[in-house]
Length: 156
Image (cartoon, rainbow, N blue to C red; front, side, top):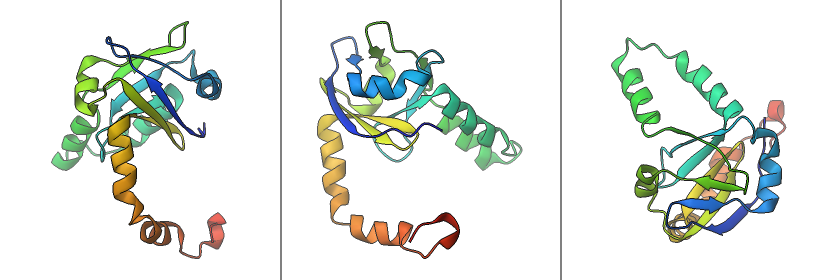
């Protein structure tokens, strides 16, 4: 599994292309030839960039859902809405399709934020707002999510 590190700012041009920062491109190097899947995020107005290997793992999980249950079909449809295969070109640029730019509200200033095995792509103003909105609740969230004594997984 890839594990990305860091938050990076870059700019999108008028066509929706953004230059991947060199330090992040280096982290993505093992995935560059296989390509990526770009999709709408579930909970936030941002995009998620999956290396193809991570996307395939996600699809294996989703493919196990019983499609004779309406909620599963509805989930699959919504989860995969707007999904696009994308590549980083030879100059290190990623083209974001127009429909995904519209969904995410990406303008000129962009933030690429690591989210363990995927990258989130945000409009800079929306990213800063999301961080500010979550700041006051983060201590409670951290305690709830990570604060249990979990000897098995080494979290304490």
